[in-house]
Image 1 (cartoon, rainbow, N blue to C red):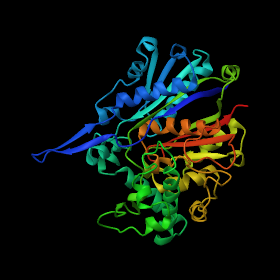
Image 2 (image 1 turned 135 degrees about the horizontal axis):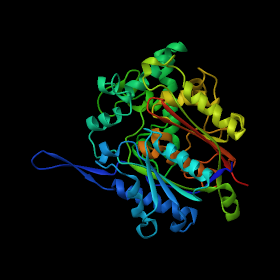
Image 3 (image 1 turned 90 degrees about the vertical axis):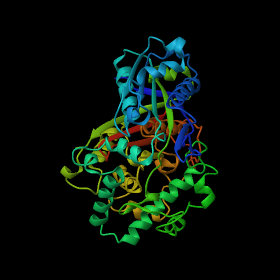
Image 4 (image 1 turned 60 degrees about the vertical axis):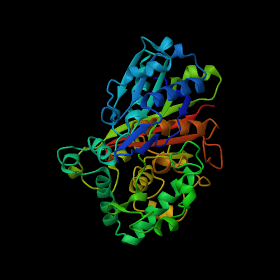
Length: 424
């Protein structure tokens, strides 16, 4: 079976594209500054331009979006992509794919299956989410639908609370004191913040709140008050505000074709050398333990086997740091750290741009942002840019040849791992 390659990618600016207005009568209004539809079109047009293909060459389109019906009152999302090139794409095939925060990784994998089947030659994969039109209460309720609703979301469990169960399980398993565990998580957040302020597309990018307040060291984060202005408030014990990723608007796009066609083009390309989607049982209460990403480890094993690599071959990784605990467990699942040791490795200053395998050079979900349906496509887009020598933000000390994305949907339920190799 022939392999598939990415030949173009685009990432929109990530951020909260709204204005919150308080009217004279005291009522509040949210004004949309960049719509769901605008983000989708920008990502589609940008990916086509980056690949240097004629829009007519795109045979089919896959759109990953988590919960647009809740966030923007829009279902039937796939056909919306046609509006990026209405003349060329009218009558094209489109699909919408959902997999919680891994929606656009799933969209990518479905496009790969179509390309491998031979039914199409060129595919567009998009990821999009517009989250900030909702207030905190309704946004939290929308995300809760991606949990096991009967006993989790419907019982008042938020996603911070669900990942707090992993944090508590991890802390207990490895016998960490509260102070030691807090330091580990602060080092993870600080690394992502430090990378994020170098990424011009990041939600917390250059000139952002993070850079202005100097929150790029663990010491600065740990020094924040527990309450009041500028506090690092408790969200779901032991997870605090700076353990949590951002509520973000954004989109990303990828153009794919077969590796044979990609090689004939004579332009930069990155092969999907191996990938896997491994799903955990959705309800946390029925899992054997809550201190490791068991399904994630299986996905990594499968993807690495298909790509015929080990973690020693990997030059950079983008992992799903929806919460700092998940960056710690993802780092261990990949094999970059031994089980129970990732926190110590982050405290020792590992995984920076100067390390053999940097982690989350983009700033990760923690700083780049987490528009849930766009996150998977964004991870792939930015690793693609690193591998073709067009890094956005921080770059490794040496030109990377192999990169890995580890994208998670739900409470570590849908585990998507992709190995990407620069084509010679």
